[in-house]
Image (cartoon, rainbow, N blue to C red; front, side):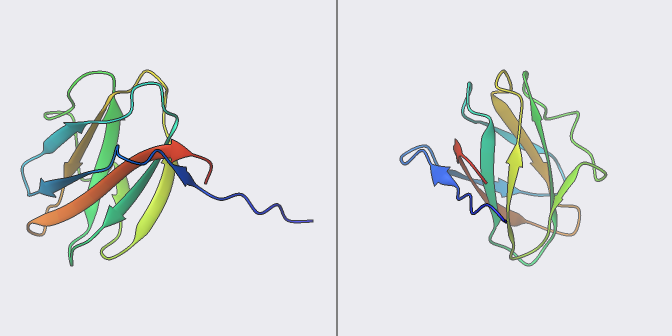
Length: 101
C-alpha cells in the first residue's frame, strides 16, 4: 500500500533568489533536512547545498530544477547554504525549508 506523505513547510522561512549564468547563493534552514524548490522562470536552474557559501562550487551538472517546476530535495542538516545557477538566462527560484516530501 502506498504511503501518502506530504511536505510541511516551515512558514516564514521562504526566500526567492535571482539566478543568472553566474552563481548566486542564499542562507537556508540550518538543521532542516528537506527543501522545497520552485522554479518560477522559463529557464532551467541547477542547485547545490553546502555547509559553506557555494558561490564558486555550483555547476551546470548539479541538481536540476526544470523550468516552471517544483521539486522537494533532502539535504544534510549541517548544510546552511544553497547555491543556484541558470546557464540559459536569468531566473527566479523560491526556496522553503520543511519536513516530508
